[in-house]
Length: 139
Image (cartoon, rainbow, N blue to C red):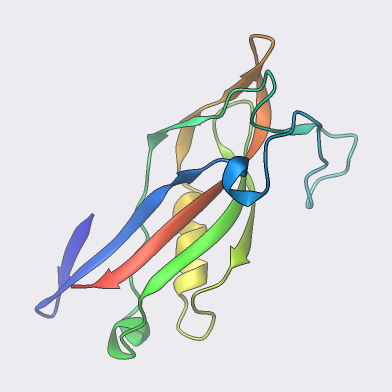
């Protein structure tokens, strides 16, 4: 995932889709999404009979000109709810890289455009919370 901008090689990529194992273990206990009423739907963590969603379409984040000029590099960690239809619902930045030059916002905007094969519980598609780490580097 590399673009070239003004002669600088820029990589805005995904380090990986991390499951909740990286964030404290597996649980099939449902949790309520932060932006939806609790009664709207249930959000699960992957594990214990709940499969993790798998990405089908990944949109890469783009560097802002200000972040390039400031040579900001690193990664943004996000908590992402993948809905039962494979689209992305709630996205929360759990480890920020940059709020001043817009890289956190770019990462959130990009991941909201991703599409997934949804996670399943008992063979039925369900909403599952996963972690995604998106890395920005100037080559």
